Image (cartoon, rainbow, N blue to C red; front, side, top):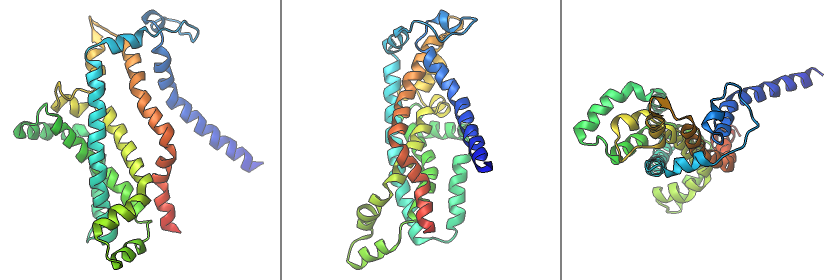
Length: 276
């Protein structure tokens, strides 16, 4: 009985926390189908006639589609580069174990803990010095650099669980190190690659500060549009904010829904294999 009660309390607490986190998301999604008067009514209600006018208004704005395309390109290109570089770095650390590798892994993870606001001033000065202010190349390189530490951390933990006998056998048979990396080891760490890709895409997809400060019209993303395009005429355009946010959430929700298995495997499977 005690164990059943503990399970009820445990899972009940999890559902409660999940509900608390999900309520704001549910509110913004429901609000995106409301008119402005319905959304700002003093007595909220879930019984209303839904409208698609907010979504039509969002797509009709000239700045929305370019911002959405920028978000897709910046997220896809920068994170793909980061994952490729991180795989090579994590493989080297896992297989060759350089002196101070544990400290190196700690420093790599610590770099991701540093908020972007802490480095925005030197980053701005560097972008100006290199002529990257407002350049898609500069913003892409920053996102790539910022995504590498966490990707290396995920991939290194997974690679440590892959037996080095695969490498040794292939090398004895005459395979090159690159062949071993990309033809033998890479297919075994696909879940970790997907996990690293998705986690970093979520960061880049939602990043606002760096893009807004050092980017420009060519790099403006949807979070920047939400920050600057929802306030006009002395008031906040709540319907535009709600519909744009809902549209912007859909790709991430769909991606997590279809790849949640790989997310869990990428975060835990390497540890399990390492313990066996």
